[in-house]
Amino acid sequence: MSGAGCTDITVPRGTPDDFPTVFNPWSHFDWAKGFPSVAETLGSVVLLLAGLGFAGFVVAKDASPDQVLGYMVIFTGAQWIPYIAYLLLVNGNPVKGLFLNLVYRPDFPPVGLEDAWVRRSVKAQQTNTEALTIFAPAVLLFIFRHPGDMDDIKHICWAFLIFRSIHYVFCVGPIGSPYAIPVFPTITFLGSIFCSLTIVIMALMSKTATVPGSELIGQGPAW
Image (cartoon, rainbow, N blue to C red; front, side):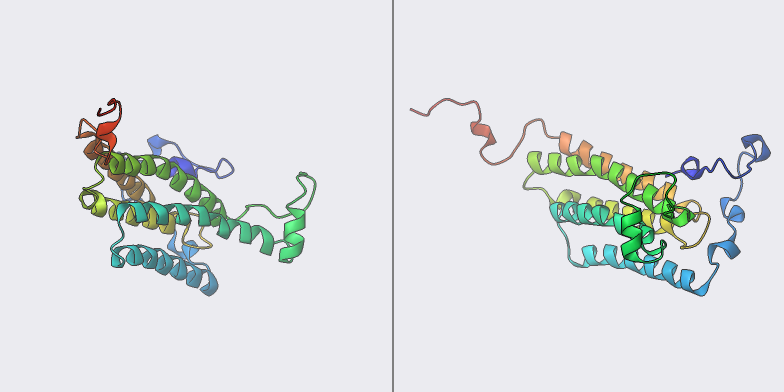
């Protein structure tokens, strides 16, 4: 995710000519609006602790690359929960929210994804899915070509998962903020892509697949 992904056409904005070539992006984050209430600040803290806890669990478990891939699939698949829960809860009660969102008519009253952090959570899941479409085949390619060398990419896979966890936390949070915290979403997105490309390059370093038994493919009977 980059700044371009946060563009809101309803908000007046300047042009690139209004800014110097190099400037401090942190100075443009409104910290007062970033933490508007105690409840939303606590939500941001819970989000941060959950992201750090998830990454810490994977590292403490000494997860193998295939396990990291499985955890990433679960992590990405579960990211629909915040915005679906929001749609249910802000429409009076969960049952009413469910039924209002089952009727696809623009003149019906269900509250949509109005809050900025909820829209960011949708965008975060999209970018996590995009990153996973590169990471998953990269890991599988390495497993196919280097089944006995999985430890060679274990720490790279950990780094990928850590990057994606940080990306999600700082893209969605702070809860209640009209803006994401600067810098972190873009840096972690690029870091995760670098990890995936590194795994692909390492996988392609071998000219032939080394899956046990693959050397028999194409050979005729031994008699």
